[in-house]
Image 1: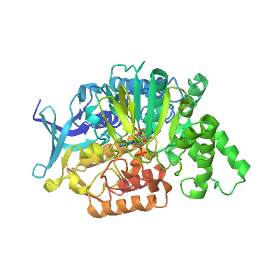
Image 2 (image 1 turned 90 degrees about the horizontal axis):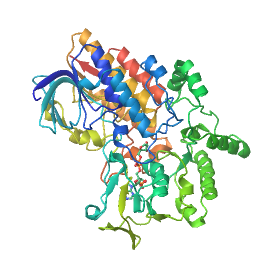
Image 3 (image 1 turned 180 degrees about the vertical axis):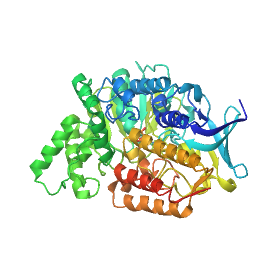
Image 4 (image 1 turned 180 degrees about the horizontal axis):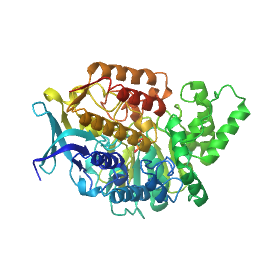
Length: 530
Ligand code: NA7
């Protein structure tokens, strides 16, 4: 197996890696995908926790590169659950005959640029060495699980799960006392399901979170057919919308309309459900006073839904709504009315210790049989930094990014020739619908490879000046946005010691696509091609 050489190696067989493989193959280049998991699907391969579901509507959270694929696949729910999304990824792999070029169960441990040979040498946990002219990191934004440094975690005697590494076998909590640590999106999706099984559920909440109802339902076949009949139009509308999702964004200010009109807008969006809630007014993420009107609406909903006023109060977030990623739930608040669910507010002091059979917090032992860490990910940079990546002259990515990620367009980096990152830091990625963002990056990279081949070029590298300018631009657009102001994983705040930098590009999908296309159209401005 060792000693193989390819034009392109792609790391990861999630939605990014699958489509990259498809595109590179069509260019007539030799290509291999290296995937740590035993199957395709990436995020949707690993995140099998109960209640796992996509927050983007299924008709939009899908590839658009193949009109045939788009027409033949039938989603069954408004928001697809993890098993269905995984089936979709598997269908794509089979339909485009992708598996024969993927090595499963193969984790890349190092990627080192060989200056002399002008190519990348990758090492895997199976002891292989694989060479490639171009290396594409399709490693995902939320793929490196964050195991919190809670004292005694290792001493827990019962089963312990991380939502991002859920077992493939069914997990049955029936009759068990369960602790869920965290109240982010994964927790908010899984808590209502676990609560229905467990004898008792303790929810350890460090920061109260906002969530809006999904109002998930079986997909109406008439709606599905109508979208399919006019799919290109929906995709075109989505491309013109800030988050790359087709929904109506109200261009009024929350502060310019009368209070009753504002309430009607929020109520209508609440009744419709999902992330479009944040599109109620244009300035919700720009003006604290505007934001507070939306936050107040949701806080009132919590008081309505939760019977015990003290519990409702503890569940009520005080910060900016939408600053941390807004969650989308099915029955989250009402779950706290169940007699078998206890909220443990740890906002005042962290969990003191985990022992063999309990979680100790606020000076009290909470005896539990199973532990669920819903503590998120070392987002955007973690997966890349867990690989020993070294560029020209042996420069380590870990050193380059010691004070936060630096990349050009979130696609490439100065000092790391012929290395591309799909939806890397500095690209819209996690602030948008991931599927179109992935497709746009893959298309950009594939077009770049085609251009290089046609022009007899072998090496591409972002210049330091272009990278500096892009990083500055990413920072400039983030600064006035309220999303850059709180302790979220967008700024690395969830991982102790991680530099605080707003990592994704918040200038919106359309602006980003336009800039990336202009750069390519100008002969790859800001890159040196040789
Ligand atoms: P998130 O959103 O990062 O949530 C992680 C949660 O875990 C969050 O409530 C954290 O509290 C909590 N956490 C993290 N470390 C600790 C420790 N040490 N003690 C107690 N609580 C802790 O991850 P998810 O998996 O839910 O969602 C990730 C994304 O996936 C989501 O945004 C969607 O885009 C899809 P904190 O808020 O940091 O105080």
